[in-house]
Image 1 (cartoon, rainbow, N blue to C red):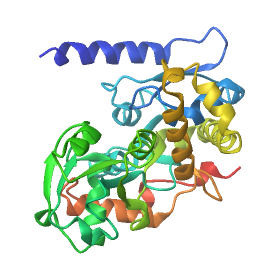
Image 2: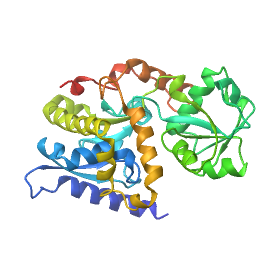
Image 3: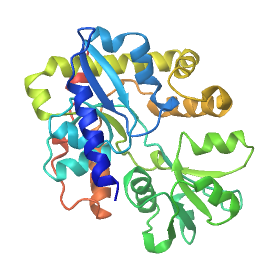
Image 4: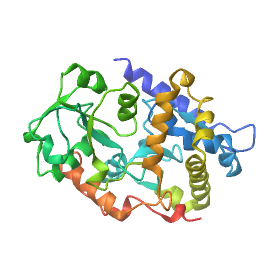
Length: 321
């Protein structure tokens, strides 16, 4: 009941911040992150700390509020950029919203299914008959699971799928479920740190799917391409620096993440796993196949009602230096 009052207030505050002139003379940009401050955002922190955003003409504020719908704000031209997942872009385009992905952040889809050693997970076919816990039946986790099932010639009827929220590791170790759907750069790092043996199937080993991206709208691309290029290149510069200097990147994160020093070993492992998912010969570049596969997976799952031409979902124009 509070939401009806709270969201308009948060939205007004966000737009006020985004539109207010910056005392530095730079263009103020509020960037919705879609998650809490985390080492996984280190490319953005690096770009901010090393002045890449400022050199590009932007005064960036990171917005971690989950109530903020970055995709819809970008589509409405209320803000210029947002961090989003590929499935959010696909869903928006299928609804006629003019959003476009302008840079790939993750190059490997960061979802896995994890089980304790008594359940071998050598191939996707091994998921048959298992009780599998998942945070929710939409978004990246669900798409990643659906792709694994398809790779194994299975459907949801071949498993017992249980929605358990974000309690996956607790549910797994308590024996409530046989396996869990997790983010591949997070849960494995935690299990390793706690000394818990596990087996895992990684979606990226069986399907090419688009993951987290930087997105804007068609008007920005058409009318202000240089702004789009400048912001994109600043982000990619930060990403490259993280790949080149992971230890420095981790140290920079300390200024942005409360309590990081209390959980150093695990979070350092999360960053290491994340870097493996971000690395590519050409950072930021999209593959059409990833969009096609993701869109078909969403269509099969009933997450969208119609497909759109893949080339309307993304552009590689701004990742070229």
